[in-house]
Length: 387
Ligand SMILES: Nc1ncnc2c1ncn2[C@@H]1O[C@H](COP(=O)(O)OP(=O)(O)OP(=O)(O)O)[C@@H](O)[C@H]1O
Ligand SMILES: NCC(=O)N[C@@H]1O[C@H](COP(=O)([O-])[O-])[C@@H](O)[C@H]1O
Ligand SMILES: [Mg+2]
Image (cartoon, rainbow, N blue to C red):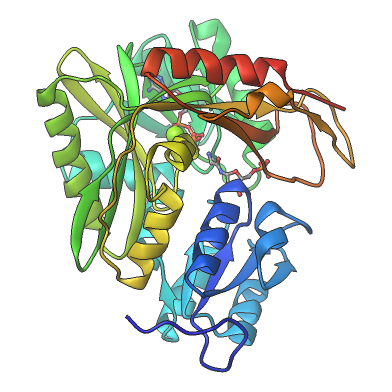
């Protein structure tokens, strides 16, 4: 392909809508190919802003504000990086001839749990947990009884576990309602899911463009309160279960279409593979690929977007631990022990300008056999502190 230089009149431009830690790595990979990067988020000095050619802080739920920045910058590709973006702005941008990654309808389907669940379970007939959608407390109580306990309750639009809870008995329902209400903003609908007592869960990174579809090694992970704390690669799974997951990931991503990487999430119980949800962009659990692959999930996303070949090498097993802030600060300081930096381990600091309790601020990365990589990644995170 033909490459250009940033800031020139003919530059290839990527606009990130969302500029967190995942966008930061995408921006770095785009810069490595001479692609100009415009990073947008709702606050200033977001991680990807720090490595972009230009940055904007706007209300990304505001259609007019999003369209204004798109028209001003005329990006070659628009890459959604978070769920909370005006979807009507993406549809309108596409109508005006801009290239949304993977495409506006795929973003629409995946940003809302109702759309993707109905698409996967009812249109594609994939195996998922049982589910219902509700809009009232009474509806939630009734759905809880029908689905059975425990059940998982989530706002239809949320990520990283925000607003999510498990109701163990009918007595928990009101608490779950309150938790969801706190986090859900304007989205007034909830999904009630059957609790799947899975043996393990995975993210299957699936990358597609005109050159074909490729899969990364499956990523195992542990989540706490709906947010990942540890991920590793490869997750040991039976060839049958892996094949099923790949087939489902192919069916869903083909159904969505477009170029880019998808983080397809599954629960595995015995040989049963349940489709859970997917991100039409790099996945937080996929940060482990920063150390395990010659081309990380971020590099592969950029390659897919540009229409380049998707080949890469898997270096070997590794793990990634999430460091979450323990304090609130307007100029956060992370204390990372020097011994985290070795020949096969290191830490990536996102540079978020503010911390609050539970906010992901950095990750540890270790290249080692799975069990020791998991242990070491956890130990590093446990030794980090902030103030
Ligand atoms: N039906 C379920 N049964 C069992 N566990 C579940 C169920 N739904 C969610 N979980 C647990 O909660 C985690 C987060 O759920 P989910 O992926 O739906 O939330 P999310 O907010 O979209 O997270 P993210 O944006 O980080 O992917 C899952 O990875 C899993 O560990
Ligand atoms: N599970 C989705 C996910 O991990 N998204 C990542 O977190 C950022 C928001 O972080 P913040 O809430 O700390 O601003 C997003 O911008 C994205 O990089
Ligand atoms: Mg998830």
